[in-house]
Image (cartoon, rainbow, N blue to C red; front, side, top):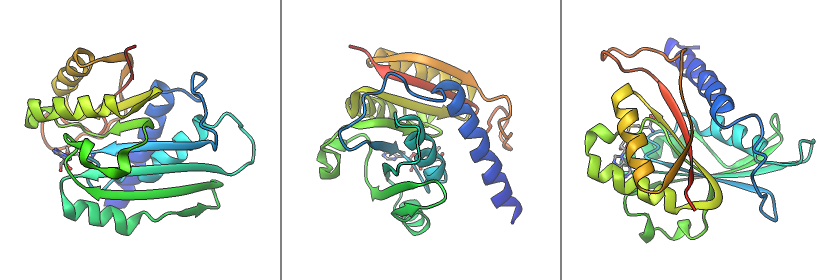
Length: 214
Ligand SMILES: C[S@@+](CC[C@H](N)C(=O)[O-])C[C@H]1O[C@@H](n2cnc3c(N)ncnc32)[C@H](O)[C@@H]1O
């Protein structure tokens, strides 16, 4: 395994641990859909390195039957960068993951996450909206629009989960999402987060979960 691949694998293990901490081992408040299909929307997903981590984790915790039955999960990823989306499409294919006993459906679209209303695949709302390394520093107004869209795309009992690279950028996002109608459930610092060359920047440094306020 290359050292890049090793880092990625470790990052994913740490992300899963953080999800266990902030989202919980099992979502007791979730009302399952008639066909027990968990729907995840990943906004500004880039190459979506986390696709399998998210589908494995949420398929299990959102499924009330903790038995051996086949679980179904769908992940729709959106990013403005066509090259990253093509990379995600190449790496993550729909099908049955026999090891996890999960039927996975992946769809990746090039598009603007601040204007989701124009996307036809987004008619139905989601159990989870996820944003990894939200980028509030790179245009607060655009990211506020993305946060607004993220909250609007949640089912009534859906969860919005974000991760951030920086302490201050995370705080700005927490403030903005709460202002826009999100109820903060929990926010935790990832103490194992991998440091990056920029001072104060590290992988999934903070992870937070919200619900939509009534
Ligand atoms: C910091 S990167 C994070 C990428 C990925 N989630 C990750 O963790 O590797 C921010 C991403 O936001 C995307 N982005 C910025 N504005 C966007 C918009 N309006 N709609 C969709 N994606 C956007 C960028 O293309 C970039 O991939």
